[in-house]
Image 1 (tube, rainbow, N blue to C red):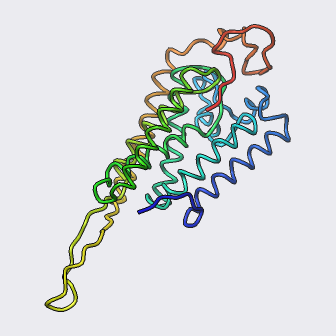
Image 2 (cartoon, helix red, strand yellow):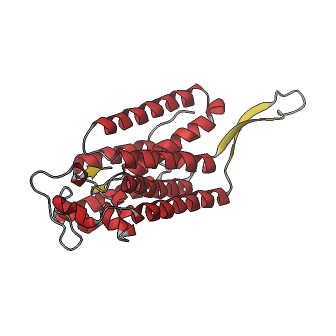
Image 3 (cartoon, rainbow, N blue to C red):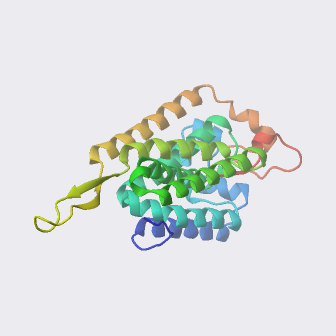
Length: 275
């Protein structure tokens, strides 16, 4: 089986990219996609605000992007890997993986850093991780092409995690959180392929060998979603209890009442990060 990016049979991928582009245009029209104030007002991830109960900041950031290049790279990754993953996993499971891993990426970022951030990378990494698990589970049936694709996926993941570790302004916690979430969810919901042999035509006809695809039961998808929700609730609740007081970030120029763009020198946790 050959893999290739194609929008045929990938309606959810098209819709997600369209939503991301629309939100980017709205951010640009209302003050800019790189303006801290505007990002905050639109619901960007910000640790102290989440700890104060603004849970929607775990969801909205996966549709927001900081600058056109950020939108472009995430859209390309989603079009390439998302279109393949959607065709292989099915649209319902694929959409669930995108949304849940996007949230889990923001949960991981919330736990690691209070910095203001936005981006779909956590969800994109979740999709890539899910695609990789599909290849891994079915590599014996799918042959060398799948093994080569799995090697490429592993290289892309390692390269991007490595870049995120050394580069500034990249929310690597969101990447890792989304990736792990995608791996775990795909293990539960990914279809399994197996070789099957059927009798040939007539008594003397040779047996025919084919591939049977077994879809996982719907309750496993529900279980995967429930597990993601549970991790989100537990992780944010526990972390919120010992989260630094918002006044500790006064040096950043951030406050709930008047969120202002910081000027001059400020701590590293105040910097804008893209996921």
